[in-house]
Image (cartoon, rainbow, N blue to C red; front, side):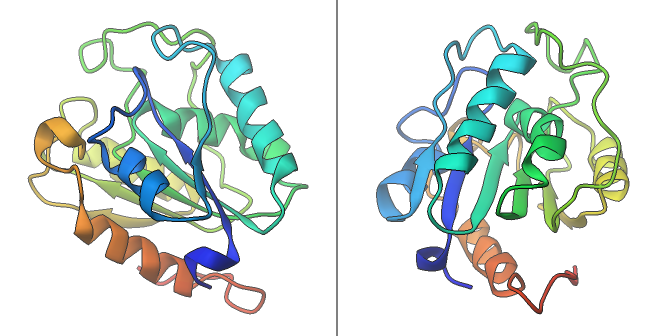
Length: 192
């Protein structure tokens, strides 16, 4: 599949994605991508965030691929059971935030704990950095394993956001393209 074959739902984390963040850039450059806007980026509430993700997936006119970042990953995995009956065919999960570690992410995320550790009902990839201040590489790998996702270590890349120099993030877009090429009616299993 290609980006034009799917509706790409971009799921930012706490504070949203500023104009230089790769998610905002992807929304501007990929015609089928749009950010799922949350009511309050600074006070995440699981039920509200999940509801908006599910509603956006219901409105989609093509197969849906989720592209989540930070605590948007937590929202995506919480939404997964409700998305199972919809046309969600994959999730590209970048820099998951370990919301269970109070030292890693001090902002409150209401209702997000515990984080789901069940296999996702669609193929997924977790991309994680060895220097992410919000989640250790080991914890990100454990998330990927629990979710049945392929795991892609991104090296020393911080939180993989504009602050860590990943505004354009061409490597991420190339890896996303590879992920899309592995999706489709007959290609449900991903190779890492």
